Amino acid sequence: MENYQYQAIFPCLSSTPPASQFQGDDRSNGFFGLVTNSELDNHVSHESKGFVNGTETSEMSKSGKRKGEKKVRKPRYAFQTRSQVDILDDGYRWRKYGQKAVKNNKFPRSYYRCTHQGCHVKKQVQRLPKDEGVVVTTYEGMHSHPIEKSTDNFEHILTQMQIYNAFN
DNA sequence: CGTGTTTGACCAGCGC
DNA sequence: GCGCTGGTCAAACACG
Image 1 (tube, rainbow, N blue to C red):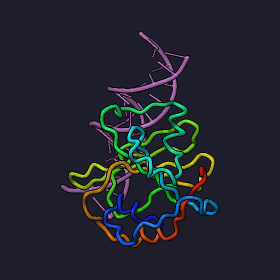
Image 2 (image 1 turned 135 degrees about the vertical axis):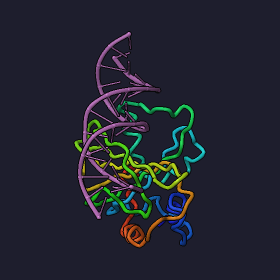
Image 3 (image 1 turned 120 degrees about the vertical axis):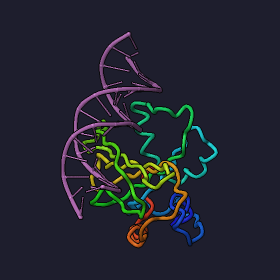
């Protein structure tokens, strides 16, 4: 798996070098997808090539609203994971600061912020309306501090993740 | 008592 | 300009 991507988001998860992979292979049974959203930042587009790009885009096509992005637009990384629980324990401490019902989705979207001092990483968690077994977690920003608890759990989750390449 | 969640209000961007 | 929608705030609340 593209561990370097995880590294980008979870600096503490190191190890395996990038394996070029997302293209073409397993869209079959994968339940894991990584989306990089950088709408104006096309320089990152190469990253998003092999990834599913379903989260934000679909929303945009619908309502096309984003707030405040005129100024600061941070890249967002969305994971699609197949999970019974919404909360993926990635080792960081999150504080929920909002929940909103989204259009065309019976499930609400939850907004979390990293509680570490000085760390302003945010994430959103929502389920796919078409498949309630799939949880989409969108990270915004990158952690610049170590994980606060054991990553065993999350790494275990990672080992079970596969590329979800439904749109390629 | 410290920390995190819930929940309604508020705000801003966009389409009509 | 108005209304809809997504995103955030903050007070009240729950829980260890």
